Length: 249
Ligand code: 13P
Image 1 (cartoon, rainbow, N blue to C red):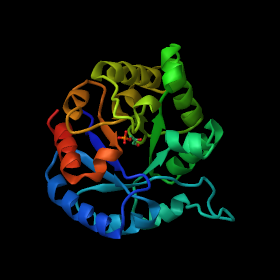
Image 2 (image 1 turned 30 degrees about the horizontal axis):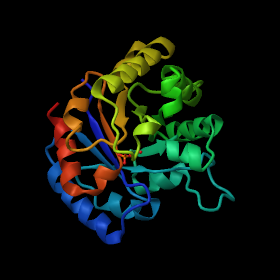
Image 3 (image 1 turned 60 degrees about the horizontal axis):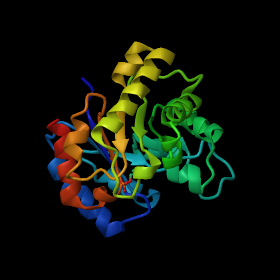
Image 4 (image 1 turned 90 degrees about the vertical axis):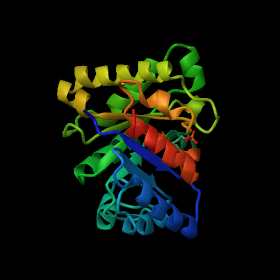
């Protein structure tokens, strides 16, 4: 059985006092909950949120693939190791679209993260146009394989987040059936291209307008192993309910 993950991607939201309050409350409700809760605050609060962690893990929202050097504004994997941070979001559609991160760039980041024994949460997903033209499967396969080809991955080290771009921040969620169809396809690609063990142990999260109402049905699908939650992770009650839905699936 794969242990579910619910990760809260705060994106560029929050403050020091929000981070303190959220950390404290998540520590309380996540204790004893049969789900791995992950908080992904803006990098400036990552150290604070990591230091307060008792019953959750943390994810960086970004990392650079170089070990060090003249990369103003960036952080390296060893800096994240220093903090005790375990996960890194890689390939989020907002970074692909707004910061021009192409597949080569994403692959280098995944390699750096894996090389440092951290866990990438690799985000993949199609646009509405791609879905309508029947390309959703090909797009996620290409994004997945270009990001991991040539890597020596330990089974379970990679976490994948299927985030259809049309469902991010739009209030429009993929139906449980639509999400399950892609998740099961992704697992099949892993089985075919990597190994059956890899396919079996990889947690595949759904992201895209997950909320307290939609979470249970999504997480009850056999290939949905939790969620990557944006907007609803900023509201403690909603986030708590989503985490409980994953624990009770
Ligand atoms: P929303 O939950 O706000 O749609 O964001 C999803 C997301 O992009 C998480 O990484």
